[in-house]
Image 1: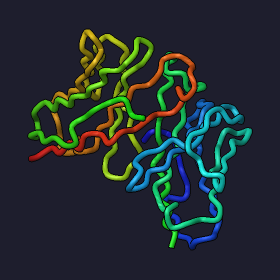
Image 2: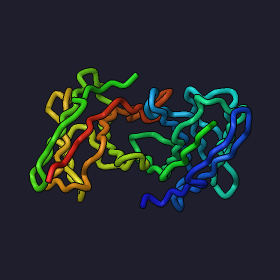
Image 3: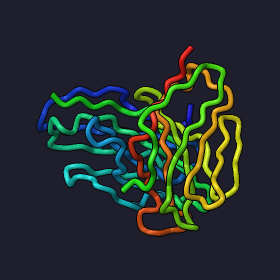
Length: 117
Length: 114
């Protein structure tokens, strides 16, 4: 158990809909990262938040957005869903901003499996 | 933009040491080598990381060659629960653009056989 929690574990929805995935980081961690894992793309970094502010962005679609709240939990919002958005979505957390020199290891949650029908 | 090369699959007998190689010939002096594993569709699990010295923890040992162009992850006494996909990741040490993200390649699918 990494200490990172994600809800829900499974989500089934229809095309065109909007969903929200939730992540609670490990106690004391200030950074939250979101990753997407699909069959054809592997694990891909989407976005990072550090202490409430966006820090880094990957290949995140404009239909996707995220935020980190004052209690440090984060939500990933996916809208206008398409079949290709079906994937595992993982959240990770780390103590600092994500600079490896600080041994800022990322610890992953169990993921949310999204199925778009 | 993964900077590592790993064999796609490996087998190992239960109880034996599993040695997983990784080539990172373009690694620079300010980049760490990280190892994660993913069991089935669970979240990736951190194993170990290092810069240039060999490292050991309760899970594994990491051996980095002197020129730092390759490394080997060693699971000393593999069990069936070690069956997973193992990812070797090179990550910048200092704050450069993109340093925060982990870039996962295809990894090595390790199967531990009874």
